[in-house]
Image (cartoon, rainbow, N blue to C red):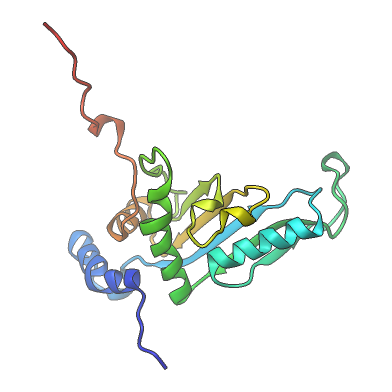
Length: 194
C-alpha cells in the first residue's frame, strides 16, 4: 500500500482549505467547500460505426484513467434518426485520487496548451458547480494525434460541495482554475495621442 497523495489534493488540504476558512470564517471543517466529483461526457454521432465508437471510448478511457460507460437511447426518435438502444454518448464519473489527478492534468497541462488561451468563463451553475466545454479533446497529452480519426468535444462538470457560486468560484480559483479577468479589470488600451 503506497502513501502517494495527488499534488492537487495535497494543495487543497495544506493551503486551499485553510485559506477558505480564513476568508469565509467557517466554524466547522465540514463547512469548507471541496470538490466532490468530476463528470466527463461526450456525444457520439448516431451514424458512427463500431470502430469509431471503440476509438472514442478508448480515448475517453485514456483521458479519464478508467473505463467509460456508453450511453444508449431508450426509444426511437425519428426526427433525429435514432433507433432504440443506439449508442449516442460516452461518460465517466471520477472521484477520489483519480478525480484529483484528472483536475491537476486539466489545470496544469491541458488548458495551457490551448492556442490563444485567455482563461475560462467565470460563470458557475448557481449551486457552486462548474461546467466547461472543450471543443477538441486532443489537448490532453495522453492522446496520440495520429490515432485520432475524428475530433471529439468534451463536457467537464466539476461538482463541489459549495452552497453558492461565490464559494465555488473561490475554491476553484485557489485550486488554480484560470478564470478570465472581468472586462472592467482589464487595462485600458493605450492610444498614441500626440
